Length: 160
Image (tube, rainbow, N blue to C red; front, side):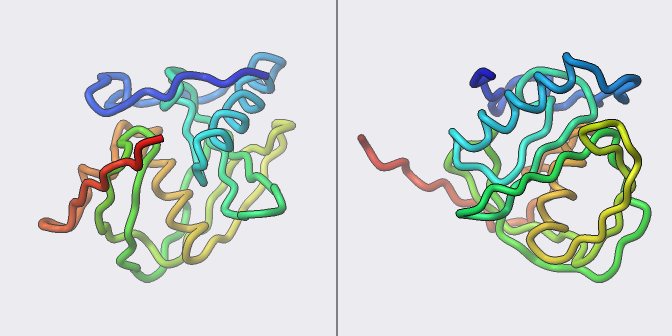
């Protein structure tokens, strides 16, 4: 496993569409492991492969603070949305920037799991927000493209 470099604002790869994974092989497994390690090191709750420079439809999410129980989504597709929620978001690719966006309150997603097996996941609130945010990344959309005008804030990082 390895920590990968997170691509940041201004990197043109973040505006590109990711390709479907055709085969869940050892390279995809290694990518997933590296993405998880990178996400945890950066204290994130989600990461899309494009954020580490790989244009593949792979997402890792873990909204738990203590117990790690990551959700792996390969080739995810939102098949149902319900309701709306106004939420504050940040993004590992936009360090120290936060803004309010509108996301679905509930979603149903079809994807492949880490073993390449198809499954469905129903998500609400924070999980729905995280999955929607990461699926946007796969489509070349970043959260600053969706912000509610006037809500963008820059939080100065604490010096170490």
